[in-house]
Length: 331
Ligand SMILES: C[S@@+](CC[C@H](N)C(=O)[O-])C[C@H]1O[C@@H](n2cnc3c(N)ncnc32)[C@H](O)[C@@H]1O
Image 1 (cartoon, helix red, strand yellow):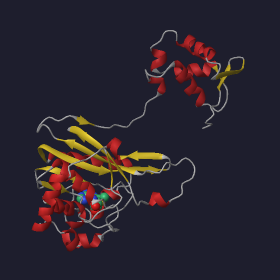
Image 2 (image 1 turned 180 degrees about the vertical axis):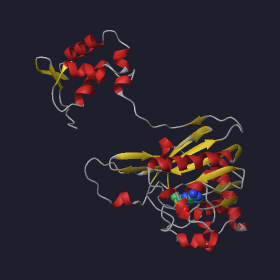
Image 3 (image 1 turned 45 degrees about the horizontal axis):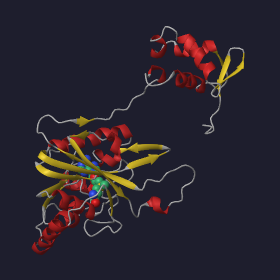
Image 4 (image 1 turned 180 degrees about the horizontal axis):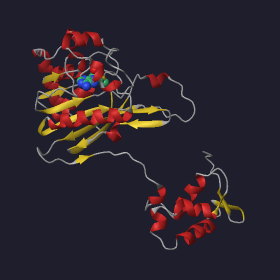
C-alpha cells in the first residue's frame, strides 16, 4: 500500500521538465471532456479511479503551483501533478486521513476532489482491509467512509460537510474541482450535482463522458436511461470571509398551496388521487383547507367553473359526480 499510496515523493526532474513543456502547450479545456484512453498514473484496478488526463487538463488550464486531493484513492492526482511538474499533497481514509474528522493541513490554491458516488463502489474493507487501517492508524475506516453511508440524506450531509470544509481551507482565489456522478436506483435519480452545496463563485460545470463502465456492456429494458457521463464542478473562492452559496433543500409541497398551479391542475390532482368518480362535495372538502380556497371568496364557484370549462379532462359520469379522463401515458 505504501508503494501505491505513499504521500509525497520527489518529482523526477526529467518528468517534471516534460510536464512543464506540456503545461505551456496544452491549455485548452472545453465544457465536454472525454478520455477514451485513460492514460498512465494511479491504478486502473482501483475501482472508481479516474483518468489522470482529466486532472492533468485541469492543472494545465488553471496552472496551480500545487494540488491537493483528500480522497486520492489510487493516487491519480499525484501522478497527474508529477506529469505536469507541480507538487501534490494527497491523502485518503486508507492511509491515515479522514476528511470528515481530521483537520485539513494545507491552505492552498487548488483541490481536486473525487468522492465516492455514494454506495456505487464501496471502498473500506473492499478495496483495502479495514483491519490493516485499524492496525496502522488506529481507526476503523468503515465508520467515516462516505461509500458506507446507508441512506442518501446521510450521504448528502457528509458530502456537503466535506465540501464546505475543503472550500474553507482554500486560499483567496483558490479553486476546488469536484468530479462526481449521478446514481440511478429503482427509477429515482440521486444527483450529487443537484444536491452538493456550491460555495463561492460557480465557474464551470464540465460534462465528462464515461468509458469502459459496466453500463456499456449491459442491455437495459424498459424506460431506463443509462448514465454515460459524470460532472466536474469548479467553484472559486473570491472572498475570504463572506461567500455566496447555493444550498439545495428537499421538502414536500402541496399543489393546493402552490400559487403557480392553476385551478385546472388542482381539481385534476384531487380527482387523480381518487379511484372512482366523486361528488362535488368531496372536491370542496379536499380543497377548502388549503391556500387556494382560503385566498378566494368564490372558490366553490371556481371549482364548478373549472369542471365545466375543460370537458376534455373532466367527465361528469352522473348528476354531481366527477372523474378525470385517463391520460395516454396511463400511469
Ligand atoms: C472515487 S475514489 C477516488 C479515486 C481516485 N480519484 C483514483 O483515481 O484512484 C474515493 C475515495 O474516497 C475515499 N474516502 C471515502 N471516505 C473518506 C473520508 N471520510 N476521508 C478520506 N477519504 C475517504 C475512499 O477510500 C476512496 O479511495
